[in-house]
Length: 88
Image: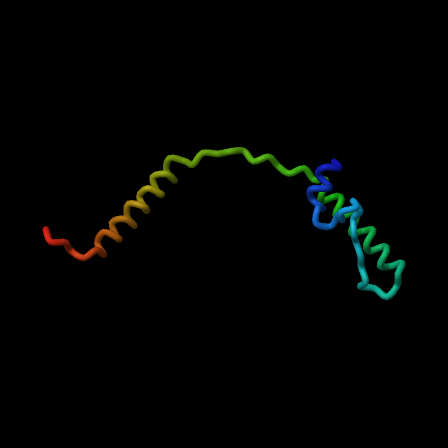
């Protein structure tokens, strides 16, 4: 869990290993402190969420056919743009 927190919050953790949080949206120091505490708890909750593992999938046969057909069509379009050679 510590590793995950350090990785997720790396840009907020200083070289000495302390987490830097601040808030000055309110005039009261106690309200700002409460806001920072709530933010800290929310950040920890988000950092501790285990990311889903990606399952590698293969493209479907139809998607492969579509991709190759569009490539073929694009190549034919480019061939027709060329100037005719000496033999034509």
